Length: 287
Ligand SMILES: NC(=O)c1ccc[n+]([C@@H]2O[C@H](COP(=O)([O-])OP(=O)(O)OC[C@H]3O[C@@H](n4cnc5c(N)ncnc54)[C@H](OP(=O)(O)O)[C@@H]3O)[C@@H](O)[C@H]2O)c1
Image 1: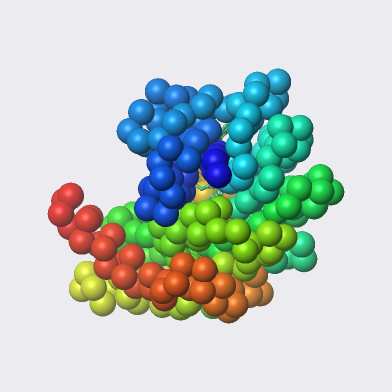
Image 2: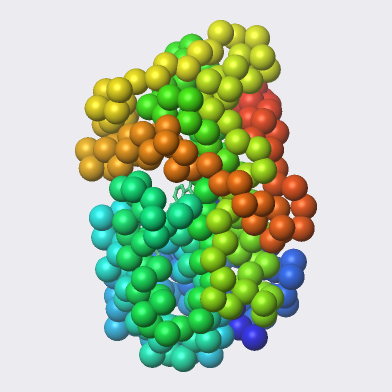
């Protein structure tokens, strides 16, 4: 059985390829990559696959049984990209599509979810067997900015006391490897998140405890937060989408209590505070 994975040179994709390699022979894995030059270290066959070149997608999928479509990072253009991949998978005779989505994609009001909802609908409409991995927040979304927060003495956000059931990318990558390589996940929808959740204030408090430095949580109105994100260089539309994600988190949109992720990977998820501790250790070593 051949498993192909898109976005294989991305952060989640690289981890998913590694996780797949520990479950199936490397010869059964195909990395579908926009730039093959970035994929030479993956240790599996690579095939050029650019979502924006629809004519090239069908031949690239020849002989593929399961395609893992890691949602594109090109927010704004990605729905058309996903639709091109879904159509190509159908034409190429792929037997199942695994799609990385967002919690409660079909009902959540989160702006970020619109492309995921439409992509899931297109996959169902294609008639292809599917597995939806509705990934919760990556812990790295928060730990990536801890250096700046420590320097500023505050984390910023707009989620109030909302909780993030976050897990590191590596946990979600393992779930990809499990559902792509096992036969029992056809037409299943998994709501994935960490076993533990945290608020921004709890995250700030843990950072303070571990560093001995005062780091608080500064909760901002959505428009103010979006403006600051723009100041950091984010495009206005994406800043608005991220501020909206926080606003919806305040209403519970990123709390996931299903236990699906731990069940799929066969172990407890990696707690957020472990990722925080590792990040702070790396920051200290780099200083
Ligand atoms: N759950 C969360 O908290 C969360 C957070 C952020 C993002 N996400 C979603 O999860 C996805 C994976 O996360 P990540 O951290 O691995 O993102 P990432 O590192 O930005 O990877 C995105 C991948 O998409 C590929 N891609 C973009 N445009 C493409 C195109 N035209 N043709 C083919 N491939 C294309 C990129 O290719 P290159 O390697 O060539 O650049 C990259 O491999 C993201 O794309 C986004 O949809 C989820």
